[in-house]
Length: 234
Image (cartoon, rainbow, N blue to C red; front, side, top):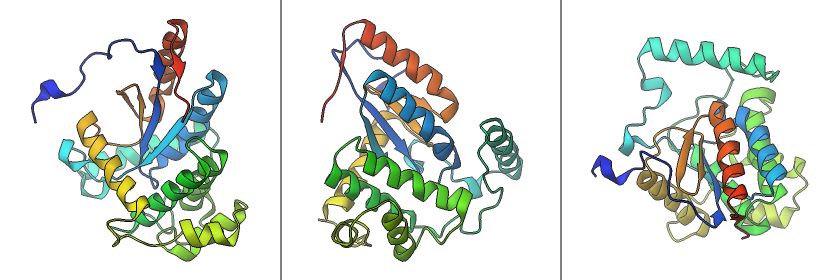
């Protein structure tokens, strides 16, 4: 795939505003950015479309534990500083992180199903996603790679047992299942957009990598609104 495929300048103006978040559920930066992303969306009447993914290795993404020790050390140092600055009591070495390979899909696909059931941008989906992230990095209430822990979180979010039975389940091997299909679509979209790490905040196809770029996200949304663009209503 040639470099010309990916945006190197902002896209042409549009009459709509799409705000999508491609993120790793276990990413500490996604946790730190979630409240600010919601604030921006609520302030400007924009809908957040949650799109859980994993690191996009096809575009050069590198999983944390395979990076050079110098990069891992800096990641830990910068995370400490950022969490302290934002007054978020994150654990420096969470008990259940990193999770075994191939297991974060359970949480990601559960979030997708909750969003499918309650709607894109729904408070239910946003809350469920955030509480899973808090479980990993703050509360350590259980192993987020296990369905039982996710179901416990779902109950804390107020979901009824029918919803939990439908949405908070492990169906990773069922390729035709809607949650699995959307999970795979999210990854394919991320590859095409040029995403490599998470979280990536995407406004009309323009990517903003990292929670420290949310100020630029808000600037872009304000520019679009000023030009007459309207938020997409799903």
